[in-house]
Image (cartoon, rainbow, N blue to C red; front, side, top):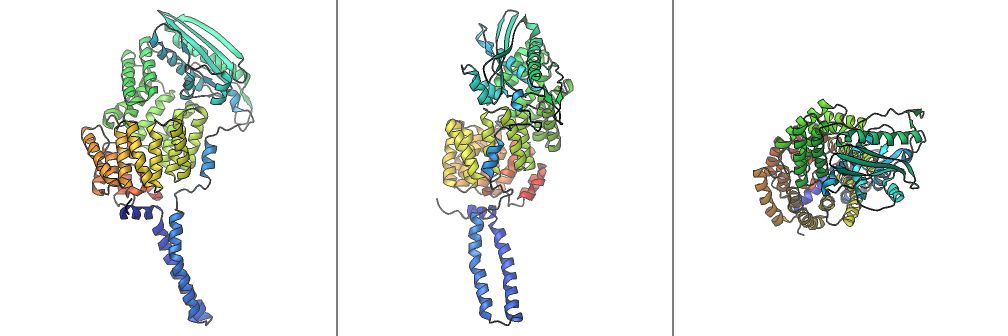
Length: 575
């Protein structure tokens, strides 16, 4: 690849070579002056000694610059990053009291649908999720997240293996049969260490009693577990848990639509998110006091904007904020509503302290809320720029959802953003080996290569990410940035035309458009697009500070004022 002066100068800045050069000149000047005074004026020695000192100072200058390039200065050095990262992803083994937390751990496996209706799966999945949520809100239990438990849906795997893979001691499984107005649910609690049944019960009820059944199952399981292994207070003394029903009630037809929405949202794609929004809106029309449906609508609307950039923020985020506020008004104890409000505060209002308070409240109400820990990591990374706090949040999420692939991906991204490129590369390559068709680890790996100067490899990954991502606006933007920063200007220009058209119609992101302009060295157009993105409340702008330094944005005098419009001016001290 041809030599590119602009990228070389940008790399000099990123590696702080200029800083080392200035410091060396200042110190060298001081040393030479001191040597002349000491050896000539004080000791009366010959000038040849002073000349020798000067020669050493001059010869040392290029050596210092080479070392500065090789050993770049990072904002938060972590010499044992790989070890720290691996430790962060391993579950802790013991509480301060000495009681093994795993003894109070449980996973709810997907209940099997025995209904003749082939669409009965969503109902069984919904019941599984509601029982999981009800258990998660009981103090003293550690409950595996839905995303990990559902990995075993439809499988015939030994309970003991499931317990080991999820790092839980107890498992709940069961079945659901629905016909006409009759509902039969069977549930059983199993010790995953030996496969023994600890409790089992069958519920034959009318459909209208679905909420009572879910509550009864959750309370029976929680009571059985806490009876076996009591909780402890901060001093290590046993405590008696206060169990209470936590399954909300709603009109049955509304609840039915809500369960369909949850199933669609779990698939997490632009298409299924649109389906989920429709189901939640139907549920709310049927029962406008159903707080979980309102909270889920808020989350789905938010993800349409910040997750896939498939909808302009002004179309979705204000509606999300209204839905979250209404959900909290109806049920102030609903963790999902606090999480939805946190996302609204963070991405629309840019009120980061309020977002953090809402995240903390969600986790206080549900200490097993893996998704809230994931968003807490986002706050620690993009708002606080705190490596250790980000790792701690990921560790909590990992303990609750050991099989969720998102957490390894996020760990790779966090290491990359804090300059730990070797660790990031290892994690992204592991993801690609597990699923070569997933575009996200290709994006992460390419980003790491851009930042570490491996531009040819980043350009290769741009094409792969684009092919796997199906020309989605996000992957168009990523590929264009990689091509531009990597020197493949013609390919970047081709994608730039597509991004410009998408931005005009509101289907694309001015943030990605601005980053592409920067990669091509068109800085005026870059800041014009980024300013538009800030005005449009583009959710991707929260990541602006973490854009690759090779794009040249951070050294531009317009960069810090732009950060300040995003309420992220405090990050300027890390430049």
